[in-house]
Every structure is written in C-alpha cells, then in structure tokens.
Image (cartoon, rainbow over all chains, first blue to last red; front, top):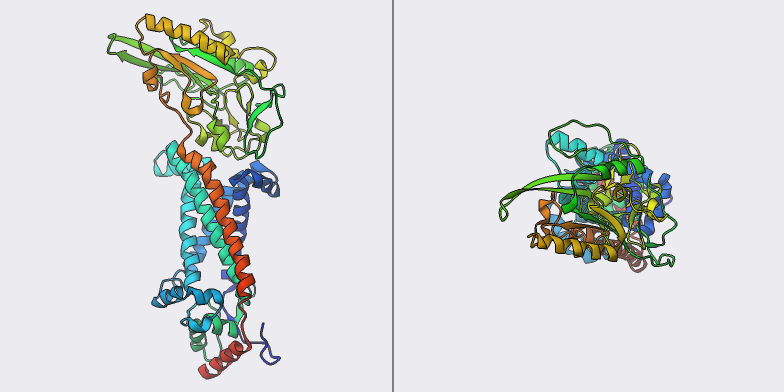
Length: 228
Length: 301
C-alpha cells in the first residue's frame, strides 16, 4: 500500500455502516449455507455437518439460514442495484478483459462505482439467490407446506426432484462466483477496507473507479461524503 | 425406530465412498404378494402395527376402504382398494394391493440419501432405514420410484417397511406374511418365491387371465417384494402401481454426473484464482495513484 510521502493517504468513504452490516450478514449466512449445503452435496464432505452439531441440525438450520440470506440480499439489492445498471463502457471493459486480468488499468475506460465484472457478480448472484430460494422451498417440507397452502397448489414429485437438481446446480454456480468475488477482493489490494472500515484510499479509487472518485469529490467541495 | 441388523452383511450403504467391509453373500430373500388371493382383511396391517409397535392416529371416515388414507410414518403397509370393470370378462374386479416398500435391488432412496449409513441394503436384498443416522432431509422421498418413505413430524426421521429385518435376522418371516389368512403373502428365498409365483401365474392363466404374471420390475433390477398380478400388462390398475418403475433420470443426474461436474467446476475456479495470482501478482495501488487522487481533490475544491 502506498503512503503519500509519509502522510496518511486520502480516504474516500465507500460503504456506510448499515451497508457494511448488511453485507456481512449476507456474507456470514452465505458461508454457513455453503458449508451445510456442501456437506449434503458429496459424502466426502459430510463431516462438515459436525461444525453445526451433526447432520440433523445442519439440515434443519440450512433453510432458515437461507431465509436470513434472502432477506439480507434483498437489502443489498435495493441499496446497490442502481449503481449496477449496465452502461456502454461496461462492454468496452469486458472487451478488454485481457488487460483487466493483467492489471493494466491504463488501457481501460474510466469506471463508475462498479466495473462490469462487479456488475456481473451482482446480477448473477441476485438471479441465483432467487433461483435457490424458489427451489429451496421445494426441498423444505415445512416451507413447502406453508407456501402450498398460501398459494393453493401442490408440488408434484417430479417438480421436487427438478428442484433438487436445479438447487444443486445453482449452488455450484453461486459458490464459483463467490470464489471470484473473494479472489478479486484479495487480488485488488486495498479493496477489503471498503467493507471493514467503510473507506478506500484515494489512490485505490483513482486507479479502479476514477469516474466514481470524480463524482464523489465533485459532490462536496469540503471532501467526499459517505455513500452506499 | 429402525435399527441396523448386524446379523446381515451390507451390500450397499448410503453416502459411503470406497468399499464396504467384505460380507458373506446371503441368499436373496423376497416377499411374494399374490394379489389374486388377497381378500382385503387387513390382517397384514394389524400384524405390522403390532410387531413394529406403531399406532396411526384415528382419521376421518371419508367412505373408502383404505384405512389410514395413505402410508404414514406409523403405517408402513396399506391395503389399497381399486375397482375395475374388465371389458373382456364383463365383470367387476376388486383389485386389492398391499402397498409398502418394494425393497428394490437398485434402491432410489439409498442413491439419493446424503447421510452415511442412514439407508443400507443387506446382502440378502432387504433395504433398511437406520434411524440413528437419518437426518430427516427427505431426499429418499425424491429417490423412491414407488412413493413409499414418509418423514415423521415427531422425530423428523424417515420411515418405511423394514421387511421385518429384525424377524428375518432370527429366522422368522415378516409379521404380515405370518398373519395372512389366505397365504396371499409368502416369504422365502427369492428363487423359491419366483417358483411359487410361476405356479400361481400358470393357474391364473388357466383360469383365463392371459396377461397374468409376476411383477419384479427390471427397471430397478428387480424387487424383493414381488406381486402376482392378474393383469401384469396393466399395473397402474392396482392403485397406481408404476408399469416400468425406475429411478428418475433427474435423481440420477443429481446424484451422478452432477456431483462430479459441480465439484470439478469449483476446483477449477479456485485453481484459476491461485494460478492467476501466481502469474499476474497483486494489483497494487501505486504512489502515483495516490498523488493523482490528491491532485483531483485539490482541483475539485
């Protein structure tokens, strides 16, 4: 991390306290869902149920964690979907993915709060969370009975089998995208402070989200203000 | 509560990778239910309740013979009554089928089960649920081609007919077979039961049931509960008995190729991250970047 001639670098607020809490509620429930889900995905991972106090507890907890995640993710969605709407420059960014992976940001267009990769993560996870919620209900006897009564239908056995296949497939995709999300946060140094302290350095914003930095600085002559 | 019978060796064990300890290969057993001999007395249901100490709650009479209305965690066998007007013979046939676990040679419940040892198949073919290992996930329900397992809301475990594995372990036949007053239910080695069934099928054919036969569906590699049916070609007449049962391709996909493809994708994604970091290195903010940000602030103010 660079230091500005011994001075602390400019700090730009990126995420408010409530946005960070919201993010970590989703993150923790996601990790717990992943562990309890993978435990039932393959026999060699069944030992992971031990982290929850055994198979029956892991199985019982999993759908309720899903409810926490869905509510939490809805919060993230409402906070961030506007900033994640696609723009024309996203296609330029994607076309130069080679430079992105090589870290040559000088060849990339100026990016707003989110680049095309982050937007892909956002929309893909939003879609997969929805898919996993619907199919998860189909695998959850208590929840299914509730929704069947509420909506006046009866799921057939083949629909429930299909739900199991789709749920597992969507889970694999969502975990793969989560790996990309976590890796990107590690690879692009200086990112994680956005979700821990809520700020990034000016240099980080200049390098990766210059359009956003200009906007933040332009907002208030006295300095950037917290944003979500 | 359904328990492991240590008297038998295991042929299959749910959610278990690697080989099972070698076991003595026992002679396959079977229960043969001759539907043409059944009088619908429900002695089998009572015997099952009694031996397994099960008590189904009393339900409402809705004007049908089935009692209870369906299989439940406390009713592991159920007489299902169907009426059919046989157009060839011009007569009403009362087709009574004793429903319950078929003890498939290729059990879909066991294939779907994610809990190690919650479902086992003994080397004699009996498929047993082991309550102590069951996590109540309900995957067996999705795996079963016959709609048999039921999850108890009392203890959140799956239940079904054990083929009286605890009785068979000590040289007895199932309680239902013992109680049957017409010998419609018989129990023995699968070979003996097939021979007995062949006699019964010949008799039925003699009496004009040209399509009579033994229901031992090959789609699940045969079953250890078999039916002699007067109309083998019309299995669904018998309260929806599937004509060609097999494990759903969706379950095969879910529990077969899907698993390995899924784990492979996750492995490749993680490996990509590691390799990328080794090759590209960290994406660090430079001194210049910080200075440019400072300049921008200066200019914007």
